[in-house]
Image 1 (cartoon, helix red, strand yellow):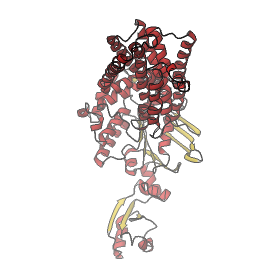
Image 2 (cartoon, rainbow over the protein chains, first blue to last red):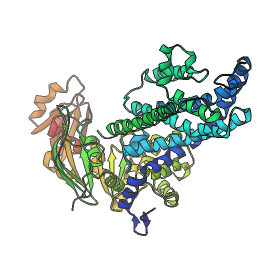
Image 3 (tube, helix red, strand yellow):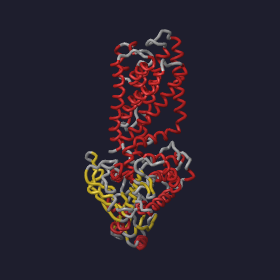
Image 4 (cartoon, helix red, strand yellow):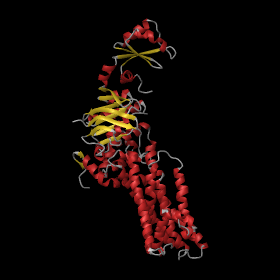
Length: 275
Length: 306
């Protein structure tokens, strides 16, 4: 805190505004975390349940059938980074759709926040920070459970957590930008869930290498944050053989999507809030 | 020095002028009203004051600042009560105040006692731990207003503060707003209820189709645009129009509404006596004082609430 906001003379409204201009995103993050507190149990149950179910079913169940090494390692080691990344990216996709739409349409959170000194940019950054916190928790829980399953090839596999955050944001920020443009709920979100997120989950190299698919289907992986994040996590976990330039492409794709999404969301939020 | 100064303020959506070159000033501590029917441009004007709608032309200064350039600074000084409650339904009553205060970056050490003080003010202390979903309409409205006070605003913007509330809830709310006014808070109120405007406003502008059609205190407007009293008579929906020529002979001005006829006179009782002396036999009759509704009817030829 730079200037004193509360004094014997009451509030210093100019100091309040100056502080909001600087730290507004953190102020909105604080709101988001408080608003989510009633749902903490649900969040933790999902964050714990997902890895347990996926690692048991895919890693142990399917892994027992797939006897041959995939990507040079046992199937459990191959699939675990993909499962972590696809889980957090799916979470990010969910948060980028209905909750953002609701903030404008039903709960009108953004409009009530817009009556404070907060502006569109701070709401966008605040929501993004809130997403980072959730992805961090979810990724970390997934990684710890994976540890119990013996699903990681090396300690460096913990890098899947930050990679998951960036991959999640690559999904979240463009969807957030799009959701802010919707005036009424239609089939858009069903379309996104069923025809974008689901195929990405199935065809983005999560369960088998992308090269196992015919060339004309591989593009689904190329445009999916899941694939880029998964490949990076595999490099970290068990040293999957990926050329240096391709690692650069993976990172650039994820950071590029996240940044472009932020840029767009800044505009779509502003257009919605100030008419 | 006025706290709001609007000069030729205009908002156009394509060819439609929602607000059409309006000019007004609001003095510090004043309770200022924007009265007009739905769609007259009241809410648009309010949103321009808080910087959440950009003006198409004209000048606007709020607390000596341009709300478009200095939105955060302007809004730090304002308490904004929107037309529709946008409380956080999942959160508890007291938490709504605290969470809202966090938008402003107010520290928790300030917010905790402030929330209790505001709950007391809004008569919601015993509901502090309840989820907002469980509150009545009047309670939600009071909570929304309490929430708007969390940053000790210099000016409160109230958009249709009591629409949808029952009479008792409205009176409780008016009382609370009156207390704020006594504390020196400037109130800017939009309403399409003339009784609300009469109760709350020192001065008001009447807006219709985005333009100011009259300006003054409620009593001055009534003096200027209406008679002291109004006689309301009903002859039944079939006969109302047929009675008009007969009644015209008894007074200078009358309005035939679908369900009743309004006759304007300084002495209502005398006029009513004259009607009864002619054996016109209205089904119902009543003498009342003129209200802003009559002013609006006079100015626009329409009722405020259609």
